[in-house]
Image 1: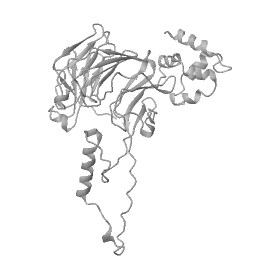
Image 2: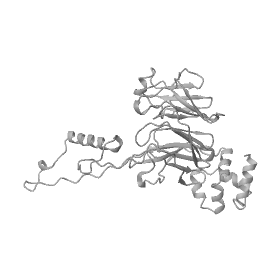
Image 3: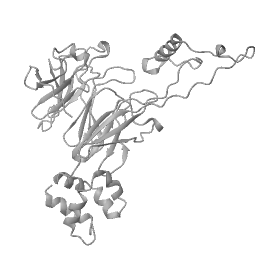
Image 4: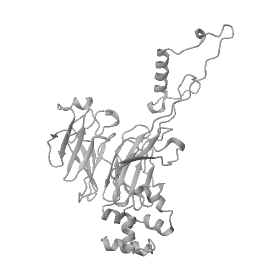
Length: 377
């Protein structure tokens, strides 16, 4: 869409944007208002509400370089402290003295935590309702933290995903679709039952609002995920409710709100990483490393690539050289068909001599090379 087309579309939707000013000047003013005020601007009049909620307004902001850059993170929130236990009953046969107050020893506390750890559903144990000594911890809370890189400000959102006060799903994927101004939250765990979810939620930064979208075909967590093109999201691998690694994959069309099942990958891949390249004319989706159900924690060195033109997966060896480390959270793709792996810490120092480093691997280059570590503020 050209600049003239965008302005013409806006004029057709709203007349007299600001009374007394030519529409061109009025639009130049409105597109420069910071994003945090847009929700308030929608209450000024019906015309402004229609204008701000339409994609053409967002595209005009991008064209004039007034659109703001947002970084969205799924982040655990501090858990409230549980209420203190009631004081122990006094012994009526003795005087009220400090020696009669029951105090748990460090060993008893350790045994209590050990019992809770092995009876928690996350670890495959069974809850014992009759065990009065079992600790009852509230489920962790997860929210959406948004950093405005243009204004250098942070704010937090707690979208309602149907979990009451439990926030959004644990470990869900956060995928941005900048071209259509949407943010997707996919999969993860139910914060109460700790089951893998097929749920998908959409946060619309243009039209406003948070809604539930079409679900994936299976509940999955710790899967590969990447946005390919303006409105397409691929997912693959991960694990299901029984902690079984998955081979399945599917693709989501954000415009049509529809999922389509893809051919299964050759092997199971849990805790894998999804990648794509901006500007890739083939729109390929890469699933890097991961492990099978029977080899948990031993990460594969290969990857699988899905080509939508052929509808087939191809396998590439020697992509991930760190068998004891997950690629999740350490990778990024760049223009020019390169993968960037950000490595550091004690675990990574066992694999690379120089400690903290930046490793780069090109699609057509089987060699890894280190880049100088840079620290900035």
